Length: 312
Image 1 (cartoon, one colour):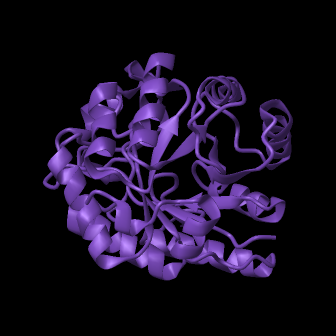
Image 2 (tube, rainbow, N blue to C red):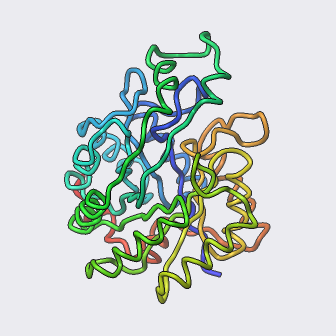
């Protein structure tokens, strides 16, 4: 099997500071987490911007660009720019960063996501909240909808390609493959190899069950009709993150971990850093006979343009 590409999703936009003191919030913290994750074995770091003072997901382009610059100063890791910063932002606000920084890679979700944080809202007590916005944010979360219309998806696709970046195509459910097939049939500008990310365990989307993943992968193989694509797998929450990681490693795929997707390193024990989760996957991969890809090896495997050609 080819070497394993590990991605680390450093902070995300859905977690709140009350959940863990280890979630990085400001540009310096996020950049240092990127460095630690890369030193531990991550070839790719997936980033979101946060308000530096209170950790609220933000669309501020200056803050977002600062995060890119600081990470580039500290590590050679591939930076995957999220275009899903917050459901409160318009599509135009979410995609603007790609044209500005012209990254090597940017995320692209191919459908609309339901949102529900009821269990967390019921579990947390007033004393747990670090910032004033957190409780109301959770309370109203289920009223939100992370909408991605076909028009917006096409706009995102075109903007990412125009910036010379690789779309990291997020597949949260089986039906999203229909949208991908449409794009592949109507867009003549997609870069090979296609890079898919199967996301399993999000509320209302594909379950994170090991026995279901081979069917998802087989459907992608046969329905899309691609001669060759590469994929990574995400399991949302614990223990899904590591169960799906092992499955993907054994099946020849790649892996994403990180505090965006799961806050724990083992049952009831918070991960103290993204690097801690990366290190666990490195150990699992070693037991299963997969070597770890460096950032430059990942660039060659995915056909990326290189860190010297970004816009930041």
